[in-house]
Length: 137
Image (tube, rainbow, N blue to C red; front, top):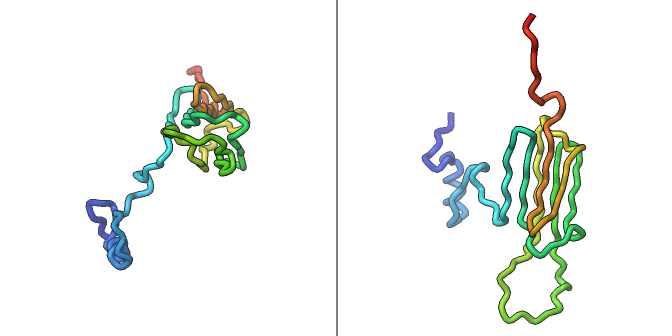
């Protein structure tokens, strides 16, 4: 049985961290921070995903669904820098997100809206998972 330390890593992980002399600490998967603003939340009606897309148009973003995988991608075009910037603070970083979405949500009815620099995705609950009323006999 592997005993976990207070960092959520096993002694085996620490051995490899020390072996490769990495300065980074291992983080459990659910604590890994993404360097791009993304909000994912569930409401009564379905799943909502908000992704910051400042300065992008809907043509810049690829949205694909393969089975239960939802993928959102923006590839930065290296040749599009025509201007010579004096100051540049608005980052248009490339991103490639992929999520395995529960079958409780209907990806076939996914709605996508880009407004005010925010890409909002909404996947409604499937009919099977909506609340139902049962009559007592």
